[in-house]
Length: 135
Image 1 (cartoon, one colour):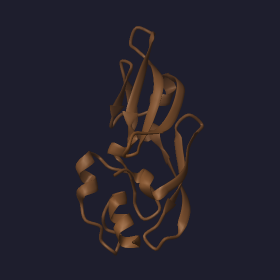
Image 2 (image 1 turned 135 degrees about the vertical axis):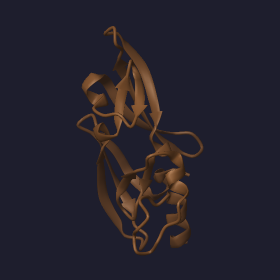
Image 3 (image 1 turned 90 degrees about the vertical axis):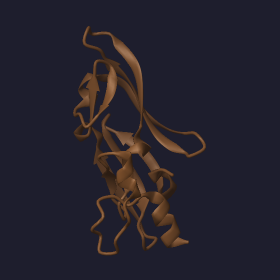
């Protein structure tokens, strides 16, 4: 399950700032944002995890909520090394999570499997855990 399950009003601003309202563990809704340029790059027309500044070489940047998961997908036309543009997409739900109302980036998908500690020591709270705590 993606962060989408505990978020609403997901939007992309300034081509690289993802903003959303997220539900905290206590049920409160708060605004959060994350700069995708700090985590995503462009490798010859393909999105690259653990890169940076993808938006500098991209056009038609957008997000969409897709599938039965559902998941949040980043789409853009990225410039290749020879200057052409290629359609590319990236499932943000693979690394994006809700850490008690804060959009948080995990280094790899398995980061979301780590347990949540009430003291907040876990780096990322996977949305499925937040839903269980609020049910």
